[in-house]
Image (tube, rainbow, N blue to C red; front, top):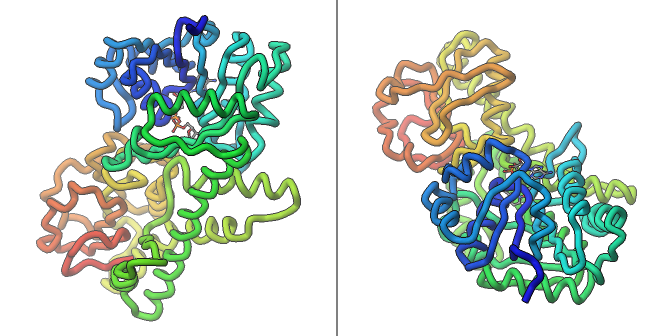
Length: 420
Ligand SMILES: NC(=O)c1ccc[n+]([C@@H]2O[C@H](COP(=O)([O-])OP(=O)(O)OC[C@H]3O[C@@H](n4cnc5c(N)ncnc54)[C@H](O)[C@@H]3O)[C@@H](O)[C@H]2O)c1
């Protein structure tokens, strides 16, 4: 019998933490969800979810089980396992671990013998040992790996993915020693179908970075080939579809207006930050970032070129951007290339509006962007830019639209469309 009142405390109830808390409650664990954002906690206690993949019903069902939401950090002392899933953004283009440090301090203040602490936030290799462990040991005077256990387990959640969910996506786990690994592995086996053990926390931290760097680099490669194919008058979309028929040795990536979301544009920078500490750049990462970051400008240049051919002046033109989320069928606009595209078009005095069934409001550079409500009037615009290939857009009869159409996603069969 554990001496603790709760089995699990999750720190940070965002895209990563909330699904974990809910899934653990579904697996009959006693769970505390802790977040410093009090209004978010109040909403959750009123069964209102702010995470798209988690419905209000799921929250209310969990509340009926053994799950509570709170902003009181003292409760952390009452839970055997404590998972940190707070943001790890970039500030001034550098990894910002201030949220991880603050969360770790709130654990340290409540740390007791028997606790198991797991970092899930994405970060560079060494964070668990070099940042989290010293903070926990210093104020508590307890020893990691003996008095309390410590490890790292990266999150692989893919918002909007109905096939690969929290439960059936294999989970990488690690510990700072054997005892920590065994205990952490045992915990995740209670809530996830397949658990994959790696030998140390640095390896586990690196797993997450290799996964996202792989995507970043391959997307950049196909984006560069899209630009070159356009110059060579080759249809890159047809090329990608044909190459995809190879049953081995090729995984297809599609070109697009850039990369967005909380992972791909950010995580590889954590990797290059770490390797720069030993004087080595990750050359692939830096080139990939350069190419992907240039895509919004490329989209604007192509739009300008298309309008020029039709003798439409970009300045004061009316452009509608369809989809502003960073990926299909979700409403997350964090790091979305749409933001850079809109910013650039605003600078060129374009009258820009947007429509996204998943995004009710949009602000770019403190300017509120008009949301188009009536999709019957698409021909009233000089140009329609398809930025995100939301399923809902398949219902639009683009062939009846007389405006210029630029499909930066290559996902729609439109007779008069121009593609990336
Ligand atoms: N969103 C994804 O798809 C995804 C996927 C895999 C990994 N990750 C990683 O997981 C981590 C969390 O990302 P997210 O998208 O869930 O973030 P998020 O912004 O959605 O949520 C983070 C939550 O942490 C809370 N918080 C911040 N500091 C806190 C503190 N000191 N104590 C308690 N709560 C605190 C915030 O109020 C917020 O509610 C990041 O490192 C991210 O890179 C995210």
